[in-house]
Length: 157
Image 1 (cartoon, rainbow, N blue to C red):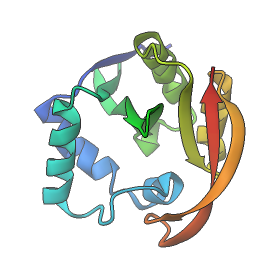
Image 2 (tube, rainbow, N blue to C red):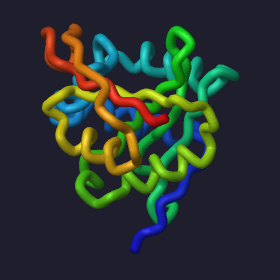
Image 3 (cartoon, rainbow, N blue to C red):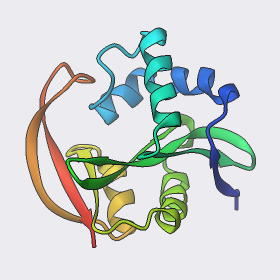
């Protein structure tokens, strides 16, 4: 079995991450993304902010040492949330689930929340296997779909 690990995000990861976050199928599934995934300057500013914020945990996800995405936790209106982005080439291999388990060992905040497009069955399955329970849905604008979609809200107690 491949070794999934978390480490700090490095400058050398940024080109690969930028390309991952521009992949059309990944953008569609994530749905809630940057306004313009092709804007490298905006990407660089955003990631720099994430990497230097004391309120955000951001880690690179590696498999056998190879960078395959990011995972993290941040606080919105007092609630801690998790988020992750895994390269599409690695979908369906259990990598997101193993990375999430590692992150949950780091993030002590509970309850912990997560969100996913309601039709993103893979991501919802990852979150529910980790113990997150569905607590509701809401409709919100998703720039990755250029329209309003249903989003599923989840909570880990």
